[in-house]
Length: 90
Image (cartoon, rainbow, N blue to C red; front, side):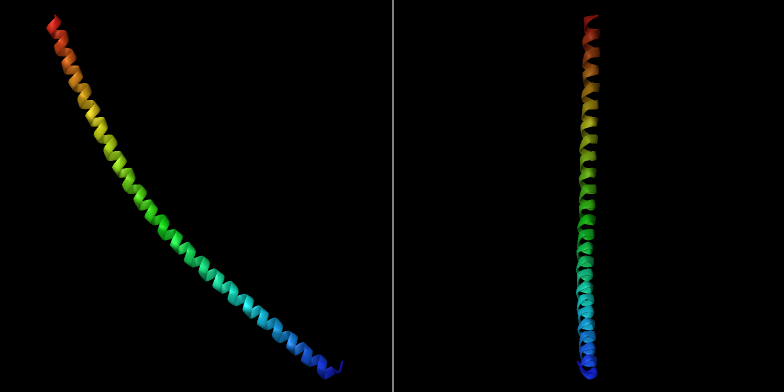
């Protein structure tokens, strides 16, 4: 090969390599942008799930508190009835 052909070949190869590198960089940037978008969506979904879990937790605690109060009232009423029954037998 002549020197000129060798130089042209090297220039073409350098251009091809540069083009490949640029394509790879562009692909990587696109992939990173997509990953960031997915992470952002996942983060929003997680925050929404967290809020929903907090609401459900409050509702569950409220219901448990109501049941505890109801059971305490029932126990108090039972104690009164038992006391009255014992006093009536004396």
